[in-house]
Length: 336
Image (cartoon, rainbow, N blue to C red; front, top):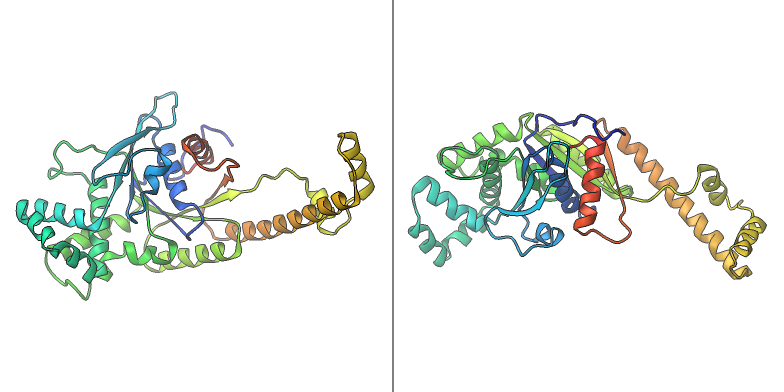
């Protein structure tokens, strides 16, 4: 694909990244932020689960409750933008909310010392989610209350897993039984105008295995049911396709030429033995079976009716260099 391909989501300001645990959604969120931070754009990547995964991937100190510059985006002919990161915790978000909307500076900190803040953010999960998503909303919709704050071209949210994403974003419904009127209810309703708008896209991360693909399918259906905008599906940790289809079919049917394999090993200067040949043929069969299963799951993803993107499995694991490699792949495929 051409590196000059136009992005699939030009109007989106808030990219929400979710996925089943173990699919690498935090890695994809970080790589997406790097991909978006091109052409001189400034991007903020936020995490809300308290794991400090973003800090580890960018090899920086644990993130405080403030926006910290962590990287330079992909370089293009128009220059490179910057990536800032923010760790959002509900207690700090509530204190900021009280200071911003109720002018409770020292009084808010006093409440924190008495445990009122922790009580307020644990007694009602809906309130907790409003506080977390409210900070994300504020980063997207910077206004006069945010003097001297950076204005971002895009915000990436490393969100909760697929099974909780609709509940997490659907803050207005979550608060229905707790706050029917008042500033928190008004704020949640205002946030929903962004979360349900074309300026938001919820991207789902999966791997080519049955359970994650099924959960992705269910997540898309739930998001659509709740009126939340579905983005693309990122298929992560894809194995290299380094064996041809004909050889894969022979390996799966246990029809590989044993004598030809022995000849190839001998020509390579390797000792040939029956146990070695048996082991290699067994590994080839298992690999072919795995590839067949992956191809079947890939076909299911193709039927979801949304754009899909693939990222390779990195043999050495994910470090900052690996993130840039993944970012380049995402940009080339058009998600950024």
